[in-house]
Image (cartoon, rainbow, N blue to C red; front, side, top):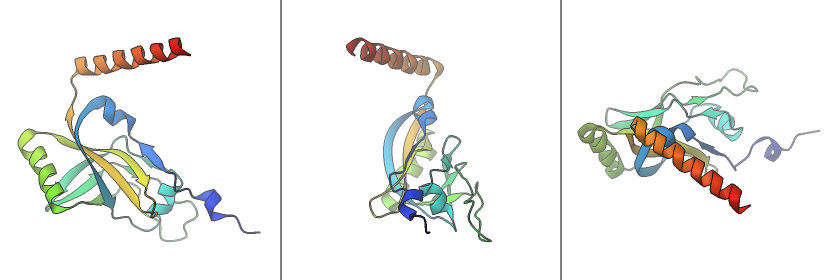
Length: 156
């Protein structure tokens, strides 16, 4: 009896990098395609991705994602992918120029915010041009979350 592939793989993938919103203030967000290798898409559809340590860098005028971990697909035979390789991101030239200008001139960084599967079945990643938060900014974020949580408890 064959297993239903829809039960194994899901197009409802929405993997978030919660650490990024805590450590950075997002200025601009962009949705980029990814150049994937081998069985990476199967691992993504199973939700085996970690974006926490990821960041983006420019090399030769192209944008790459570094530090994002896509676990190897267990059922792959001989064509397994490297889980920590740098992945090329696909953006339009004008978007790449804006990002590169922000990184070079303003000292900003590019962080992955979320990874998702669009309605056509393609893996997309949302990246943000971000500025690092100071310690007092992080404390303010924690206070805001606590206040919001208390208000939600009081309402219910």
